[in-house]
Amino acid sequence: MAKKKIAIIGFGPGGMGAAYKFRGNPNFEVTVFEHGKKIMDRRCPGPRKCVHCNKGTNICDKTDGNSGSGPYTDGKMIGETFIGFREVGSNILEYVGTREKEIPVIIEGKEFYKKFGARFSELTEELKRKANGIDLKARQNDMDYILSSQAHIGTDKLPEFMKNIEDYLLNGGIEVRNNENVISFDSSRIQTSKREYTFDHVILAPGRKGADWLEEELKKNNIPVDYRAVDIGFRVETDAAVLEELCSIGRDVKLSFRKKGNGDLIRTFCVCPNGIVSRETYERKGFNLVNGESGSDSIKPSKNTNFALLVSIPLTKRVNCNNYADSIAKTFHLSGGDQVVGHRLGELLMDRRSNESKLKEFRIHPTLEDVYLGDVGLGMPYRIVRSGLYGIGRLSGNKKMIDHFGNGEEINAPPMMPGLDQFSTILYAPEMKRNGLKIKANEYLMVNDWLSIVGDGPGVTRGIVAATASGILAAKGIIKKYSC
Image (cartoon, rainbow, N blue to C red; front, side, top):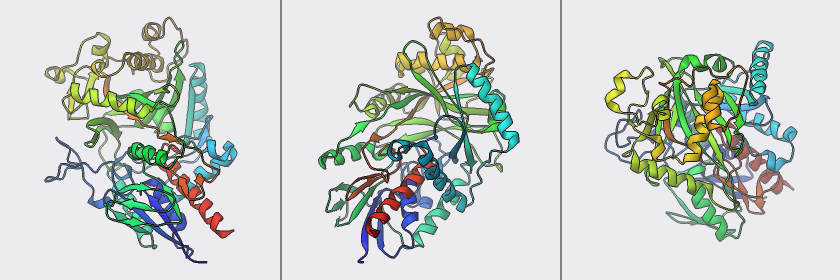
């Protein structure tokens, strides 16, 4: 048969997974459109000091370009779940129907990264014994604990790791058109910033930052779009000893629980043991977000551990939760003077702002040097602040905090993170996880005869391994379609 032309929009983990499955297949001609740069051409100067500084440019490429946010993240990769009720970072269950069908898809994404040297943890008898002990304590606290197979590359080694994947795909016949932005698409053509193309099938993999553009284009093509909840909260930085036991079992500690009364879902996410807090700059949107990083074993660790403490916000049906989150981030941009805002827990509880003049008094020193020490309450909605403080109370076992922010609720169980409630613990804001859109598709992520969706932007996944797995799954569906 004549070669079928496949267009992949976006070369993050989802796009890479799809390209990987097509690599070497003589029946397909694959072109990837990526508005950002190749991995080693990317830099992030930021308006102030940045670990990825490149003088002479004002544009941050930290979240744009080949492999998406991949080269400048912590490098945590989450595989299949060992203990827990769901697969982490995946909404693939909604499309394939059962968890039994979802797990092999996730494992295929995991095997992709193992091919390039990622070493994932295995569930040994010793690990299972220790994890079961944590799971029991979590249940006593009315919390869900999830332990998954995990790999960690390290922020310092991740660019080279992802470049090896980039080289493998580029050397295998996959054409990537960098710095070529897709403006619009329909069933017969793609219009980019440079020219118009025709294709037989399009795979949408624009990532979370492309969700707004994607929504507009889908609506133009009369494809229904719904919205997922967005997660908003804080990056918490505390003494590494507070999470040492939990992180020794699985470095990315996943705990989730609900606040009695309003039912807010609160969860821990993206734990960076002995890591540093970092900033993500979104020039085009006009705000900054906070994140975390951990280096490889060759990097001298910090004395702190940081993690995201998030509150899930599902707004009224058919309301775009990401727009709501962006408005909060812009408020912080105004109140923080173009910086991430930091606030000591003890001072927040005293209804008092933090102040740089007292920085020498901090027992836990902030690892984010470019931080505005102030008041997170000026930018964060009251409900999220209360739910976040309630969450710290629950995790630390602080009965006064649980009682005050949980409206009289009582929990009598050994705490999961004793010491988290100390005065010097630092809360950074805003921390957000935009969860993409919600689009109907079949078990191979095919929306219709000419369009497929993969990765975080379209809301299929929420993480690196799952996004890659979704790309592989979508490519399988296309190959099967044209093989019939």
